[in-house]
Image (cartoon, rainbow, N blue to C red; front, top):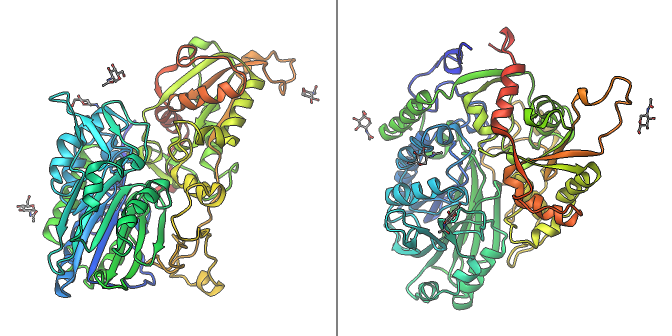
Length: 614
Ligand SMILES: *[C@@H]1O[C@H](CO)[C@@H](O)[C@H](O)[C@H]1NC(C)=O
Ligand SMILES: *[C@@H]1O[C@H](CO)[C@@H](O)[C@H](O)[C@H]1NC(C)=O
Ligand SMILES: *[C@@H]1O[C@H](CO)[C@@H](O)[C@H](O)[C@H]1NC(C)=O
Ligand SMILES: *[C@@H]1O[C@H](CO)[C@@H](O)[C@H](O)[C@H]1NC(C)=O
């Protein structure tokens, strides 16, 4: 196939004022200002390699180079007010974008680009630990790159050189801010994750807070603020444990939490002197938080979720196109551009005839990405020649699909945005269809067997956004510390706002401080829940004779599933009367083909680009 290139199609109309070539220009919008304090923070989380920004969404089109410029300009602004600014990142920097996933080795370009940002306190996410390579890159490259900033309060790693179990990074740090001399004790946590490869050890947070070093750290009396950063949901038992431990000794010292993992914008007020901020996902959001009068009996907190685009950056920095970018920031944008070019991320594989959504439309529906997989991709592509047309019930967890597909060019980049995972397929043969269906039903309904199992890691089967929704609306198990759980619903804006041409769809967040957190005034986007797993029954035509009633279902099937979910299949099998031991009784299906490759193959065969797309 002759490779088309997006950058050639969307000729870079503007060459030099940053963001990636081909990305849409931000749309001017109504903005809410930042409320500065003497202590201020900028926060990213769950960036998942999206350092090039969103090339198909104007609201999030700034790249990491622009963010480098933004931090520099915001530090200058802080300086001019004799205030402090701290920059935070709470992990899941890897997996989810071609800039990380498509190089060999993975991350070949990412770590150098990340390193260009001046981050004050950071932590690891779970995605840094799934694979040996990834956690070792963290230990050997990223931790040294961010020496003095990277904290690992509850993660150890087997040092690949010595073979010894060592801390991934320092457990905590004490420092004093430059301008206001605020004395801070900071920690960096990961939630009670159990899905890591065996070269790392994650200690449950509830145990870490009982360790001597932690107890000593919080016995510090010369402290104005405890800063708890972590790849941890804000309304979690883990942060509850940290909060309780600190508050037991310090009823009065402010505690500021930064969290992540659930891919949502959220702000929690735990008490009058503590709060927590979560800043979304995929470089869509830069979280801003300020605390004024930190040392007083009455600190004032303020939060804002900044849409990651140059319009917002210029506004908040009080600068314009000419004065905003720094030389360093522009260099970083260029590094990203060169990496994207080397990885051929603009190569077009086909053109999507319509938008396909993860959660913006109901499932099932013709615009649901999961319905598309169930009805078109899997039935037309999933077969193993060694299984000779045996009917199959195929299952994938919905979390395997991470991002929407937009109408138009589907690029090398789009593949990794949609599904960055390397999981292939396995199967169990001769499963009664009735049993297989019961098993799927269990995976979708019976969340209890998972919440009580050791595999419980915040709803591991669905996308994180679903998990946030489920925890919030349904289970209430991880409810907050002292605050009332506030159900975050979509705001319905008044009809005038909806009709204002300047108001575009986007985040409309409700959190513990109200509904004015987003910097950009948007109309709301619907959120529809999705199941844990999708399923599709594949009955090859040749297995039914012409005369046979085609709605007759086979009595037994190959139960085919994405290998990532084997532990959950094993668990659900137990409860559905399927007597198997896994992996012993399962085998590889379509050897050498991952779900992602299967989808890509289908797209190349089915989605041609014609003139209407160019
Ligand atoms: C893992 O690391 C090794 C050694 O650096 C490298 O050769 C290999 O390509 C890496 N694997 C992936 C999938 O990145
Ligand atoms: C980790 O698991 C591998 C198999 O995947 C095994 O060979 C190795 O011994 C294990 N290492 C440790 C430290 O348990
Ligand atoms: C930017 O890149 C140029 C050319 O590579 C280099 O000479 C310069 O030192 C860089 N400047 C900064 C601030 O990174
Ligand atoms: C085909 O089988 C289904 C279910 O067994 C039955 O409901 C339906 O009436 C049958 N149709 C015909 C045309 O025999």
